[in-house]
Length: 390
Ligand code: FAD
Image (cartoon, rainbow, N blue to C red; front, side, top):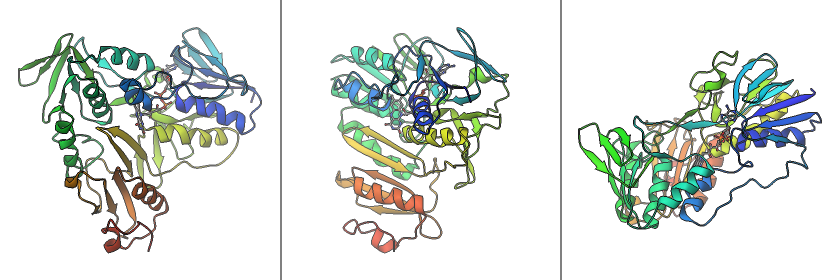
């Protein structure tokens, strides 16, 4: 291969380029990115950056050392055999990695801020002034982190959530209901079962006809794959670029990684849309290996973390709004101390684990989930006993 093009200079695209070099690819390597910035990390944007503890989240590596040619401010606009069409002309490739990530779902109306980029984060931070009325639409991972930062800055924060509990897309209500008191304790008003109809420049209107004024409205209602530019191309897209566990698209020489993909998981027998940092970090090495002739599989237990209201939340597994399997609690959420919850399958293996300020439980639970090892349920339920396989 003489030229590999990677489209998307986020975490996944950048790591794909790095992995190609580290795995011995010697040809031309072009990294195309729509943003003006050098590659950077997104998770700190809604945490340390919004809180004012960090400005720069750039990835620490050398483009020059790895001979990666970054082309910033370049949008891929289409794809045909052997050619990426871009805002500055055609770019021929022999190998291609698609990594255009995801973009926020937008609500109707002309107002509202969305938090995806470094530019978004720095501009939002400047608006979080003491006493400002801030409405956050969505109590998902991002909404909760924005509410945390806004409350810390002394803003009057209201969070509007369509579902009955926070993080309803990822966790069953029996778990997520324990997140509700964190909002009030931080001085944040949480309104659940609340449907926003439109976001205007001065606030939001609700489906019930009422409205809420705000100085700042932040919308965090999920993301969708940034795959619009692939319309009309041979790449299969259905809620993400469809790839196998080998991360191949089915079009020769074209692989896809990170938030962009809906990958087939042999482990779960279904397609997984990751949308999490861990996938963007780990999947590129597999795609690079396979593009260079390997035969590797990427099929981990999905992992996400969130830092909200002074707590570290870690989750590994694939649940959605349904509780799957037997739920075992370790610790009592009502005490305000750390706690964890394990879902066990019919063989008493860990199907999923959620930990709130319990990193040891989490590390063990995630490892056991990856390995499908049976557990002793009685011992697991005792928080004084370390989590381990029977
Ligand atoms: P992206 O990071 O979206 O990068 C894709 C890049 O491609 C972007 O730079 C985009 O501009 C570019 N691009 C898009 N279209 C085109 C095009 N047509 N042409 C050229 N370039 C294009 N995950 C966690 O697990 N835990 C967390 O705590 C967490 N916190 C987060 C906080 C925030 C504020 C955000 C936004 C995300 C967070 N995530 C978190 C999610 C995590 O950051 C993403 O899963 C990860 O960034 C995905 O990386 P990616 O490279 O696949 O996509």
